[in-house]
Length: 187
Ligand SMILES: Nc1nc2c(c(=O)[nH]1)N[C@H]1C(S)=C(S)[C@@H](COP(=O)(O)O)O[C@H]1N2
Ligand SMILES: [Mo]
Image (cartoon, rainbow, N blue to C red; front, side, top):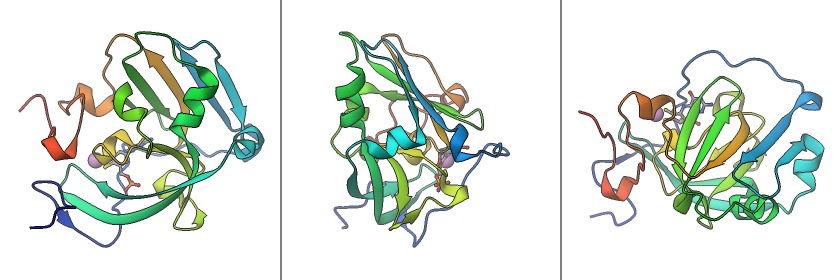
């Protein structure tokens, strides 16, 4: 028994990159992160603005629904909690939609987004994010399967009602907790 390994998973050395399609190029000078929807204070952050926010580090295991897990990846960036403190979601917000610049979307239950280990990461294991792992910025939600960790992050939208992202529309679970094996809602 390995208490750190969720049911149905096996350990591998490095994360395998999965992308739904090509990722448009980007100049950092053009980078913007939008935080909007049901929030008191919508944000539009340039790369410089983002780097000025308090920086943190999260060491966490990464679990993919295709049954691999990677132990103790070290992410650096801005905690989701810091973003929540700035944008102040309104009462009744239950979901966060994350958008990548490749057109990817995924819906994240607010309760998991707000956990202390959720991070908007720009570094992995001490280095700038590799292109295939989400450069320049990705969301990392270690408490959910990896498809909830949107790469190439450009927008976070807070909503009261549930909407489905790219994989959720195709049958993946709305919650996605690896400890409950919330892999698919449709078999
Ligand atoms: N923007 C974006 N984020 C994404 C994806 C994607 O195609 N586009 N794929 C998801 C899926 S299905 C998985 S399993 C993880 C894989 O993360 P990795 O490529 O860093 O290993 O990224 C998730 N985030
Ligand atoms: Mo995936």
